[in-house]
Each structure stands twice: as C-alpha cells, then as structure tokens.
Length: 503
Image (cartoon, rainbow, N blue to C red; front, top):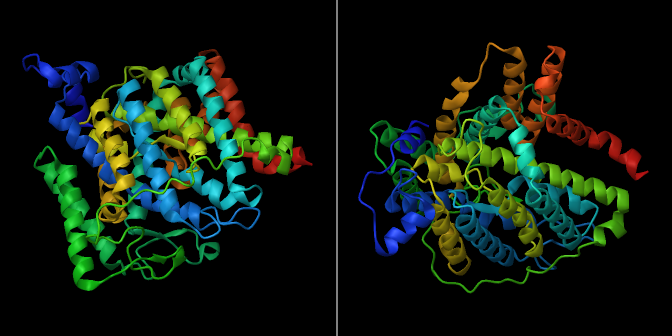
C-alpha cells in the first residue's frame, strides 16, 4: 500500500513524451498517475501470470461436470480444450475492452465463484446451455443497472468506512485463497467431527509436498525482494518460482493431483504440471461458443424458480464485482476520499457485459479478477497493464501448451503478498465507534471465512443499518443502503424461502 500511495502522490516529472509512447501516455494517463510504460507492461505480465491458471482450472470445473440431462458440460466426450480456448479468448477480449474503456488496471476472466456454483449446483436442475441463458440475463440486468446510474448510486451510498473494510476483507480473502491454492492450508477430511474445517498441510500438518514447498519458496523470494525494494519483486518471484517448479518436476516427476477430473494424490501439482511443452502452438477450439438457451431454464424449472436463480446470480455478480473494484482502486491509490475511482460508470457497464459475454461463449460469467492486485502491487495504475494482459490471454488461446508452464502454486504466492499489502488500510477504520467497527469486522472476517466477497459485504451492510439505527443515527443511512440491506437479507434467506416460492 505504501507503493500505491507513493505512486499517487509523486507523479512523474519527466518531460512530455512524443510519438507513439506519448500517445499511450496521454490516453492512459500513465505519467499523471505516477507510472511509466515499462512499469505498466511489467504489471500486465504479472497479472497474466497470476491469472492464467483460470485457462486450465475453468475446464476442470466445467468440462467434467454433468447437467440435469446427464450430459457432460464439455460435450458428450468432455472437451476441456474447447472450454480452455473459449475461456482465454473471452478473458482476453473483455480485458482489452475494459482497458480501453475504463482505462484501469483490472483484468477480467471467468469468475470462480459463479462457475463453481453453476457447474456443481445449478446444472443439477437445468442444462448447461440453459444455465448460460440465465447468465446472459443476469449480465443484461447488471448492464442496465449500470447504464441507468443505479449501480453507481448504490456504490456511492456505501460509507467510506465500509469501503475500507471491503478492501481489507478482500486482502484477507486474497491471502486465504493464496494459502489454499498454494497447498499450505487444506480442508480436513473429517469436517463433520472437527471444530476447524481446515488444517496446516496434510494429515498431521507437516506433510506439505514439493508443490507447496515451491509456493513457500516463492513467497519468501518475493517478500525478500520487496524488503530490499526491488521494483519488479513480484514478477521476478513468479519467474523464479516457475523455474524452480519446472526443475523439480523434470527431476522428480511429481505429477498432477488430478487425472481427468479424478483425485489422484494430495502431493501432486494442483492444476498445472510445470513442464516445458513438446509443442508451443495449437489451433484453438471454439466449439463451445454460442451454446446458450436464453429462456429454456424458465420452461424447465418454472418462472418463479427461474427468477430466484437470476436474483441469486445478479446479487452475487453485482456485489462481488463492486467489492473487488473498490479494493483494487483503493490499493492502486486511484480512489478518492469516498472510495470512488475514475470512469466508475464505464467500468461497471463493461464488467456487467462480462456476464453476457461469458454466457454467450459458454464459459460462465466473466468478472473483474482480484488477482489484478498482483500487478497493482508491482506499480500498475492504468489500462495499459490490462491491455497487455488481454493480449496475452488472446495469445494463450493459440499457445495453449504454454499456459501449462506456470503452476497455480506459484501464482498463489503473489496473492499472499498482495493480501498483506491490502491489510495496511485497516488503520483507516474507526475501531472506537461500535456502529462502524462491528459492521466492518463482519465484512472483513466473513469474506475469507465464507469464501465469498458478497457474503462479507452483505453482512456488513445489514449490521451497519441495524447498528446505526439502534444508536439513533438512522438519518445518516443512505436510503439506498436500506434497500440493499433488505435485498441481502432476502438473499441470505433464499435457501429457506425458495422452496416455498417454487411450491
């Protein structure tokens, strides 16, 4: 966070640039935001290296699950290659559009929370094309809310203290994701009988395996480089971790944790086996694009049940993205005192369009990725960084063998570092005022504990409305916050009341 503050308060004093570099600088406001073209390009590469795992992970989540008709989502013969190609292409195009329209260092890709919900839960009641139809409708609603200004109004209605809490909570969430993806924190095998459902390592807590060792070494390398103020600390650390991983896999043949979606060993590489590919270029398979049935779900599950599903998707997408962009903009030093950032409305519209694009390409809803914080931590402040990330994702659709080089354990190390940086803003919360500190605490703690940004935001909003009202400060609550808090209450109660509505 110190880097972000420094970049914001110490704009570049170099002479005005001319030619192509000058045009880039002017369009993206690179010097104005205290950055350089080189810093932005390094940041874009870091974001890509931290996010590229989604090209491998999204097919694992989607392709090997079955929908209500018993068909594999990836086709009669699961085709993860097609899902990977469409995932990379969609992420690349959306990130480029976001870079050019919003000009912020936020990249987009298939959202992990939504794709897991769709592939594991929703498709038990509808087919995958029908689920994608609901995603398209969800995206159109979000775009409409953003275009009419309602989404911006809701964003502005959130008190600065809660926006700060959201940023801090996301920092903890990011770090927790990193610890889980790195293999250091794992789920216990007997969750029903233990008070804590996670454990350090595997089994007795000291069996970590080589992939987790790589994760730990990468964290240490990045932390040391940041301590001695090396500018490209995260990028250098990611490259070093990848080289170590390749050497270990080449010499020890560790192998993967999963084989065709089936669990094999707890000590293998989680998603990507780091090895130099036998080929670099591969023609992409875009056969999943267009596999969408816009209104089929309503005919299968009923109108009311379909509306409930859309409501769930809208709430999750809407507030996950809002929280993520709040945290990223504050980390980058681009947010004002109220937590608003440049081109807010444009950013919200493009992000909403990500759900539409994800539905149309059959890759699940695409949204702003919290991993963008890794590039911001390295100095990225503009859309130029995201432009490079987008181009690399498009290239990844044609160079899919190369995406298997960087293991998720290496990328996870950057998330732990970024989480530590984002935690710094916790000092900006007034912990002496219970009506602020308690809602902030709930927002912060529930994001990692519930593994959901939206859940943390919802609990924080509801607690804020209740606490301020009980203390006689109801007049200070924006009227929109009352509506949003009520909406979140309904959202949390949906599992209880949805059977009544459907019936």
